[in-house]
Length: 387
Image (tube, rainbow, N blue to C red; front, top):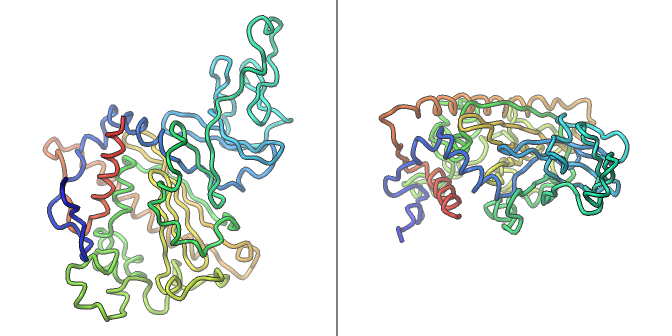
């Protein structure tokens, strides 16, 4: 077995590693394989539970080619189904969100109806008794999990460990009341790049000095093109230096990710001094979701593939209820800052996608600072190797 090129006190790669083949970012057959072996087997984030709040309320989604319906039943239980009628496969709900009339899900084509728990309720056909018993046909159920108010589904392998999605770092946000937070602002956009390019960009900061001037000012270590203290091979030379330029964390005087670095005022109780010093804490749930937790808000980003060269990015900014109820608080300072960072990321991801079509560029190479990109590639290779 090849030695881990990231092992040791220095986080970076110790030898040259090649990136994934360029064709993997635009080839339709490769994209279809990734849908089957990655997107249809792992837990995929869809929405906050409180956006499907009342009995009969619903939301619809598409994961790859698969139509999904999330509905809250009469007992208050969230359920997920394939958004497909059992009769001849028609789409049941075509709007992105809404409230079902009455207490059933009715197909708009031939009016088969289903209870909110997915059971078939009625077939309006005179001869149905000779063909099918209503109690034998229900909607195609999809396994659903609610983690701290974040709703996930799994289309094909629900036995796969849910916690494995999170890279075992959920403890990093244990002090945040995630389940109690409320969406204060949201943004959705389409990025003309393969979904893997977005995740590659997320997993390195080599691009930060050139692409993110505002973010690199707020987080001094990012100005050096690295994410953590030990990403520098000479980190021991500054081991006793508390300067965030070497230790990471926010610049002196800053408290959160915002236009001016100032807190919105209603901060989370129970955070440690170190959590406040750093000012940003990540939870990554491949392949669809990541969180960034700050002292006064949390940003949730969902990634869904739309095709070999297109990705949907949906961002939600979550705040304590007290923040949103306070007329003196301007939450735009928080969401505007990270929205600018995301716009910068989207632009360079699209540049990356466009350049990959070169007939000479079969594969790229990874710099030492891109060790997490290497780990991402290894994860993808491992997923694809599982039949």
